[in-house]
Structures are given as structure tokens and as C-alpha cells.
Length: 359
Ligand SMILES: [Zn+2]
Ligand SMILES: [Zn+2]
Ligand SMILES: [Zn+2]
Ligand SMILES: [Zn+2]
Image (cartoon, helix red, strand yellow):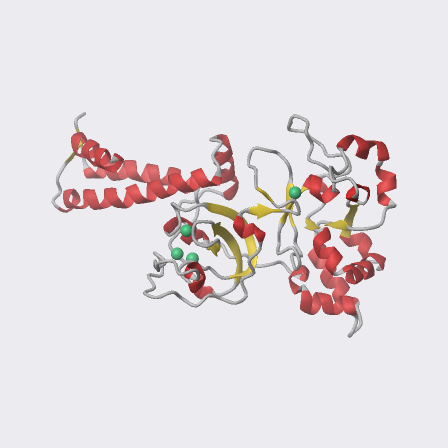
């Protein structure tokens, strides 16, 4: 076969598009800047002043940049093309979606922390996609800025040096299926009197799945930290009797229970006002902005599975999608005159098109 019709070509193109939609189910054509501060998936761009940008901008405006996926951040407004991107005198470039002609005014509610430099947890490390270490995001986040924490850092012990296996278990770390939410010791330390009050309330049985102390109390003099072995020797019971920093693991349905507790407390109670004013998001389902889906979308689970199966990092997934989007629009431009004149596209035309793309 030396010639294919535009119709056939379009069909092939649609199949290709379906493939891409399975990888990235969202339509990356709306920047969330105009929506103001919302909870949404954010990407940090380490090339552009470590600003946080929305999903669409990560694809349309920063595809060739050094991006770090931060997942959901609360009260965050896209900083692509705002003054924050150019605050060190960088040359102005507009947001490709908003096509602004001057830098837009950044929202003041954005909180920038170590995550935007690609660092996570109390150990300030970069995310390592090659380990199976569990990382949990703090659902309170007031002090830690919704940071992510390693399981071993939550326990205050060294990373497990054993070869990583599927059923790797960290002694003393709760089963992932036994809780729905996690509050870091960093945030609890900051609001310790509030959490003492919570823990002494009878409702806490319905809310708290585990209270897990950090075991670094002894290790202050010993910068190496405690090893897994010494942790095993000390045993769990002793740990439970320790005092000091601890994290909380919350039972399924904790938001409903927090709301019930809030409503049962008298006016002027400090725990009530914490739920009313300081962390109201703990007592309701938080709305997370999702970019509009493309028509024939695959599920996020499928997307994750595909990416895993192909052993792609998000960066690579993103890069291949961007390449696909770019080629798709160029190919459409290339094919337009053929379609308009009802001409037949030959394989050599297509070959020529892809040859010019390689250059
Ligand atoms: Zn944006
Ligand atoms: Zn960038
Ligand atoms: Zn943009
Ligand atoms: Zn860590």
C-alpha cells in the first residue's frame, strides 16, 4: 500500500489520540489562574524560579522545564506568567494559555516551601521514584505546608537498608489499609494543646486509628539515628509509653466525626474554634479542582497502571504527551491542504513529515 486517504489517516490519528488520553486523561487547555486560590494539583517548576503551576501550564508552558509533581495543594493559584515567575529580573514570557502581555499579579495566598525546590519530608530529600518507601501527605498541613513524609521518618528511624521487596514492612508502622488520613508530628507539635484536648475527648476513639511516636528521642546525642535493629529490640510497648513528638493516623470517615465533634462542643471552646476557623477543611470533604476531562478519557487508575507498566516517571509521561500534542497539531496543519483539496496523502508525504520532525 503506497497511498492512504485522509479519512484513513484521521482514523489512525484518532486511535493514537485514544492512546494518549489513556496516559493523560485531562484536557490541558485551561489555566486555573483566573479561578484564584483553590485546592488543585500543582507542579513546581525549578527552571522558572521554582514557581507552582497548574496542570495545564505544566504541559502547555513548562514542558521543557525541570518539573516536580507536588499533587494537591490547598489555596494555591497558578503562578505561570505572574510577577513571581520573573521576580529576579528574568525576561518576560507569557503564559501560553492566557497569552498575557505583561506579568500578571500573583495571588498572595500561595505558600512556598521546600516542596517547590523538589525537597520533601523532615529529611529534606528529593523524591526517589525507585524506592517503595511509603510517603504520606499531611492532611492538616498548617505548619508543614502539606508536606509528604517517609514512613521511616515518621517513625524517626533510619531508612530500611534491606533490599526493597513488595511486602516490605517497617516494624511499628501502621498498615496502610488501617487509616484514611495522616497528621504529621510537625503540625501536631505546633498545635500541641489542641491535640492534647482532642486525644482526651471521648470522641477520639472514633477518630484516631493510631498515635505513633517518633523514636528519635534517644538519638539526639547519636546523629546516626536509631537503626532498625535497635528499634526491634526496644519493642513497641516501650514506644507507646514514650513522650514527645507523635503523628496521628485518622480512621476512615474522620471528617464526619470531626464535624460531629465540632458541633457538640460549646461556643468559645478552643477545639471548636480550631475546627471552625483554623482548619475548617478537616470537617468537610475538600473540593479539589480537576481539569476538564477529554471526551474519551481513561481512568486515573488506568493511567497510573499504564505509567507503571511502562516504568515511566511522570516526567517522561509528560514529555511523551507533550511531544504527542505538538506533533498532533503540526500534523493537523500539514494535512489541512490535503483535506481541503480532497487530495490523497501518500506514505512518502507522511514519511517526509516525520523526517522533518526529527530535525
Ligand atoms: Zn496555569
Ligand atoms: Zn518553567
Ligand atoms: Zn501557563
Ligand atoms: Zn524523610
